Image 1 (cartoon, rainbow, N blue to C red):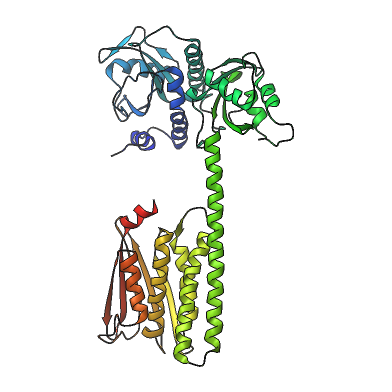
Image 2 (cartoon, rainbow, N blue to C red; image 1 turned 180 degrees about the vertical axis):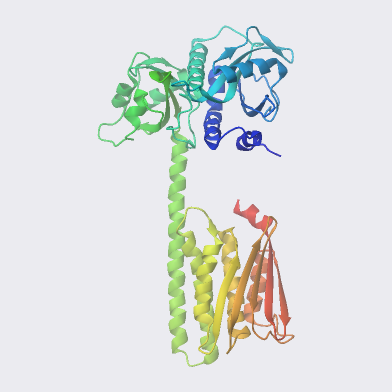
Length: 498
């Protein structure tokens, strides 16, 4: 069942990737348009049978919604079809001539053509869809100055949508956490950067920064200059944002307060006429982000130090193994060194990234190389290869799995191929529900009754069954080698990874 904007648009077969990107950008600002217009915003695209289908719907945050159910995927209703079609074919804004009734609620509908390229040199405008504004008139009241300004800003943006000036592809995508919305604070600037309107929330944000006067009638860039400490570095993009000249984002910091800003230049057929500046006090959010960055750095440093300590332990075990005169003790120390080194590989990988999940294919490639070098005896030639993908695993599962596979590959090399030449293959199969790993060798196979007696086998059982809630099964065929199958429930892993 198609549900995303891209799926719905591509299903019509009438739009290019550039058109879809344009619609995505516009839909990303659907909440801004809905909040400024105090109305539901719907985006429509044409269908092959001369109709239209809704691909995006945003409800207003500060007004009553008209649609209590999401209409994405629905075809345009008959009472709007002519208006929407006229806006699309004529590339002009079409307002309803009289109030439209929707489920016994009086509404006013405006249809705005979504123009990606305006008409030029005998070439018609390239219209990719239609945006409709559905205003609920059932709760009409005398508008405040803020509501009038918000509506004026919405009308300016609708005009820019119809003249291909909005959305702006130069604007950054994927806003930071805590990006400002219209209700958080809005400042209206004229073409010279003078403040003509500041909402109460916007004024409060600047008051917390240390500005004690009224914003209206003041050049916003001069307000920022007065607020910022003279010796403190600030975002290089801040002057452009405060002047309303570029569609960008920046933070302004003073007196321990951080205010996030987003500027949307307003244009009339390409000519700049002013700007909207959205602002929000994000002091607590930025403080939390800084704490997370510090914690992430600390965690990475811990993994790095654990890795170094484990490598030191492995080196000490290697030195001790070389100096011991007992063959049995030397083998035990060598195996312990190998196990410690395998765990160190996982911590080394974790020390390189922010996430506590690891790409286990990368980890196992390093573990496999380590095991093959250490386990092979002078008279044994083992060719190891790995196929399939393990995928990403949380660290608490990566460590026991790496250690278990170390034991299995070591056993395959030391016992399955002892004194011979052969292959050891590791096959990983990951589905939506499980991770299955098979370790095969081309040796002569283990004699009946020996499976499960050694220390390595006991370690593997403990790790797979006890820590990963999985199963392990040995298949021994004399003359054909040994195959060990590990089966781990994937949903159990993914729940812990999240």
